[in-house]
Image (cartoon, rainbow, N blue to C red; front, side, top):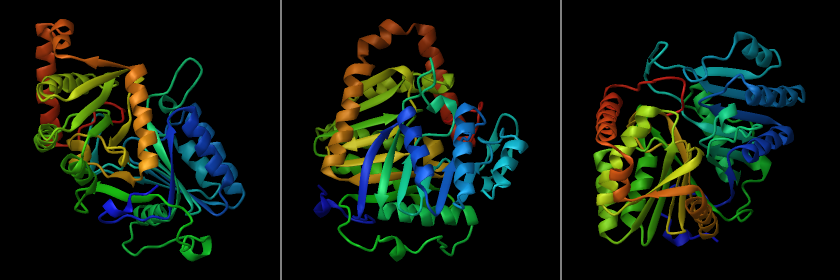
Length: 391
């Protein structure tokens, strides 16, 4: 059920959406998409690791290439830099096109410049996966090792074709839009095939794109009841915080689902310093405890959902190339809200004001303050990479 009357700009309506949880569910869908592809596959991802999961996906890609499926892979040149020459050659010898998106400068411990933070898979211009999930063991369910919590959206329809065009532009580095298939040939010209409203949202400072940040501002300004944000590495800037606070003053309930465990120590401590501000402003904070939270999902009023690669911090807002999908559809948004509320109920611990004093000693609070100041300073100076983590 689409709420088309409330939609303003840049939406297409000939789409179908399904929420996919990370781990086995995501990789089963990914393997099915690769197996069913008839003409082409495009993958753009931040981290592609040469581990159990990466090698398995590579085998599926090679099998598809042997069926004469054209394959195009674009990887971030820093985060995926540990792929061996032999691994890359095994793909290229089957005709798979693979290229790295390179930063301006990099060394062992840091880099400067844009990074490609996309997590996109497109097949035949008809079906796509977009989310926050990289191709690596940590995002998969392995024996005795449950995956990090993350989500993607499975897309069928017109938005999948638009993602095909976008992936072609990024891979070829051409302003002229090239495609591997004609839209009319695959039947997407038929209006009414699907009924879900979607739009592609991008953040890329070089291209003067600030659309995902804009989606969040629209939520804060237009929400009627509730906003739920599930975010890893949640270090909002002052403007973002002011907009959140203004929404609460209007009577909007805001819930944050944040990481209880984190792969980046300084980022988690910086987040916990932020808790004091959030609780003072009547924003509810929940820590996800079973595994590391890596998800980037927000839902507003059971009406709008945004999901993709965008973290709520200045790296995503000002440095990385990010891509989200906005969905304005009551049925889909309600299903996502139900999913995240189940996580709040069964897999999270709520943080209260008393907890900040009971759980954290004076030294802990000092470390949180130092972490917050340090993290914010680093984000302002450059895109700094502490280790091979997905910030």
